[in-house]
Length: 152
Image (cartoon, rainbow, N blue to C red; front, side):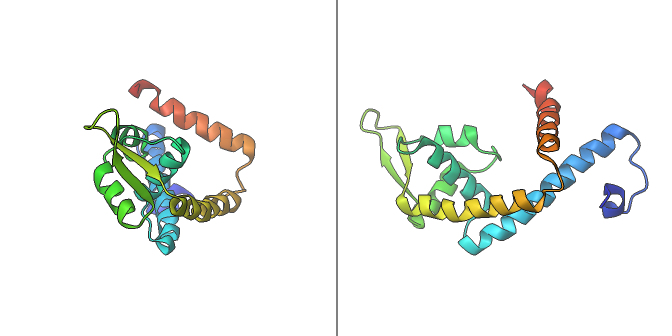
C-alpha cells in the first residue's frame, strides 16, 4: 500500500520529506512485526539483538561496551538488557580475570538454542517480502547506507 494511503495524506511537501516519513514509517512497521513474533519467546527486539551480538562473539566473551556499540538501538540500556537475559539463563556474566573492572558476558547454550528458533522468524519475514527481488533488496540496502553517509 502506498504511504499516502497508509497515512491518509495526499502530499508531503517534497520528495525528500516523503522519503524520510516513508523510511521511519516502514522501519516502525517492520520492527512491530518482528517484535510481535518475538513475544512468543519472551524476548524484546533489544534482547534478541543482544543475544545476536553475543552469538557473533561466541565462544569469546563480550563486554557491555562492545554490546552497546553494536546494538541497533544504541539508546537501549545494555546493562538492564543483560540483567534480564541473565535472569532467563540466556547469558552468563563474570568478572574478567585480567581486569576486575571489566565484566565478561557470554551467551549460554540455552541462549544459542533460543536464537535458532528466533532465526526462523527472520527467515519467514525474508520469504514474506519476496515481492522484492534480491537485486532490489541490495539496492534498498545501499540506499539506506547512503542516507547515513553524512552522519559518519
